[in-house]
Length: 282
Image (cartoon, rainbow, N blue to C red; front, side, top):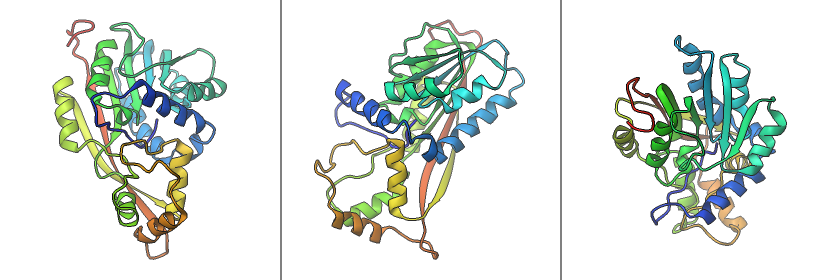
């Protein structure tokens, strides 16, 4: 879904903040797909895994968790290998866009990934692309995914780790010290520990992705079009002054041709629920 994350100081994310996240993505629903370069790359990586699995059943039920505007739900619908398809997202605005652009037969549901509105053992594949980093603790989401998967079902999740947008973070630190402008992400070690605790035997793959932009303002514009704004503690409550914005652009490291690069620390989680697992339990 988005590429920025929120980690609150208090345990859990308030319903007010969840509403704020949903509203932010809903506002960007019309521009999201045009700006989703990273999202498509990371989701396509998982989609290729799905397509290469020889054991995939034609009658499988697939959940696109954090489906956004339904880009990958449409890919699954067109694959000819899915009988039932569900798209769940926190943002009603995103789902409205998904319904308008998606084919008939997809069940679009407004829902919270930490409390999925699906029965135990009802899904063969959970596909979740760049959504889990929005959650305060991924363990709750992983437990819910485990609960709704049938024995033998698959989980595919992508997320971002600490070090993502490090160039932007450093530039803002130099331009506006004492205020946060880029959200925090899980460290690799923290994510690995949480995945091992909830999904024994899961595989976590990592990769650094660097994307080019014409300027820091182009990067900021892409984040805005994604609805991936900063909502963490320490942000300025007023609009950032133009002078600070210019200073951030000045501090951002440039390539020889004047363009910039942005780094994203990507992670993919792959897990299969044991065939002998009890429904709703590990």
